[in-house]
Structures are given as structure tokens and as C-alpha cells.
Length: 244
Image (tube, rainbow, N blue to C red; front, side, top):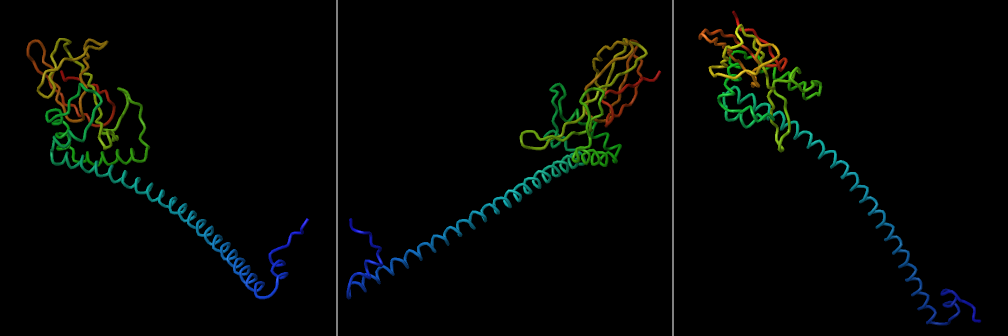
């Protein structure tokens, strides 16, 4: 069996010019291998740094994007609040209709039903500050209430609905105590049918949007008695007595 001879030994075992040429070729190949290995190492290092940079940028981008998203959400919320207050200040019922939302389909939002709200702000300019305080509590998540007729909800609860901010107004009910259970009730000039309660002298009317209301009881003889009710914050159910 012929023993294995390494390439350098084989070259050294040859003779003359051929050996010198072969040795030079071998040296060039070895040099090419070294250069190739160095090149691969550089490529690996470059790819490693590139991946690291991508990871850093990805993380930074996620933070930036997250921060942008939070900023955009906050800005959108504050802009919506500004629009609500501007619509009230300008007495713009159409703009209010686009900003308000109610789950109860029996409560329409239109120029007529918004008149009591605008009248309340006319008589109580400090109501804007009350709204600011309520929105601040909602922003901080510190205003928690149990939804129901005896709860104390904000005047306007801000929600995201169909990718935009809307304001859900509190809906109030009035329990009216009457001298005559047969009396007719008139609210802001419109006759309403009161709902009977366990007490025959108390009728339940509503729901109503926030605002100022005049409640008039008309007895069978046509005699009228009127009281004024302000529905803006507080409990959902108000009890009022028609003066004797």
C-alpha cells in the first residue's frame, strides 16, 4: 500500500522548477483559504452586529410607536373634550348630536331635547369646571360607579365608539309627589304620562338628559302647580314635591 503523502511533502519530494511552481501554487491556495476564513469571520461579525442593531431599533421603534399611540390617544381624547365644550358654548345642537351617544333608543338627542342642557349652562357657567373635574377623574380611572338607577354617574361618560370618542350623558328619572293622583304632568311645556309607583301619590317620569326642567302638575279642575328641577350630576333618581 502506497503511503499517504501530504501536499507539501509531495512538493518537496519533487525536483527542479516544477517543485517551485507547485510550492508557489500551494502557498497561494493556503493564503486564499486564510483570506476566505477572515472574510467569513467579518461577514459573521457584520451579520451579528446587524441583527443586534435591528433588535435595538425594533425595540426602540416599538417604544416610539407605543409612545406615539399613547400620545395620539390622549390628544384625540382632549380634542374631543374641547369640541364638546365648544359645542355647548356655541349652542351648536348639531355638533352636540354628533358627539353624544345614548344606549337607550327611547331617548332622542335633538335640538329640542338638548335645550334644557344648554339652559343649564346659561344659568351655571361653573358647570364647565365640573365637567373638567369629572373628565380628570375618568382619565385617572378614579371615578368608579355601579350602573343603575341609584348610582351617581358622571354627567358625561367618555367612551370610544366606532373608532372615535363619544360622550354618554347620564339619564335621569324624576319621582314626582302629587297632591292629587289624578293630576296631569307637564314637563317643559309638554304633557307626559307618568308611570305609577307603589305610592299612588308618586309618579315616575323620564328618562331625561342633563339640564333644567320645569315640572307642572295640573289637577282635574285645571289648577296648576309648578316646580323647577335641575338634573346635572348626582343620583339618577330625583324626588321632588309639587308645592301645595
